[in-house]
Amino acid sequence: MLKRWLLLAVIVIVLDQTSKAAITSHFVYGESFPITSFFNLVLAHNTGAAFSFLSDAGGMQRWLFSLIAVAASVWIVWLLRKHQAEKLFSFALAFILGGALGNLIDRIAYGYVVDFLDFHAAGYHFAAFNVADAAITLGAGLLILDGFRAARHVKK
Picture (cartoon, rainbow, N blue to C red):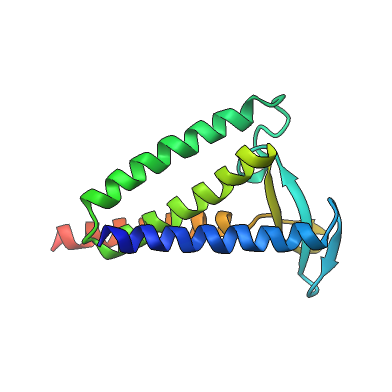
């Protein structure tokens, strides 16, 4: 069953890297293409973490966030091995693992993460993100849901 969760993480990585390759081959840095009144495709480079946290830290963040991603990935694989029969928990972890490794690939290869999904409203733009970021966010949400389900089960 562990192979199933690792395969799901690989699928996330492939989707993430394929979408980033498509964007970088068709856009120049900073270029934006409107899709709807609230959504653009844009080629952005994020040298920091989520929402560009520490993006101006002088380069050390590349290796710091890479080290964190590697450590988190090792821990997640250990958790997947230990809890592989817990479907929602493992599904969430596989999404987080795939997202973390997708962004790690960028960080190591380029020194930044490629972002391209740009949602906006009333002149305000949400921070651009990518498939890996979406997978991490979905995985985190599913972990929260799993925690609520476990807590409810314990109460009974």
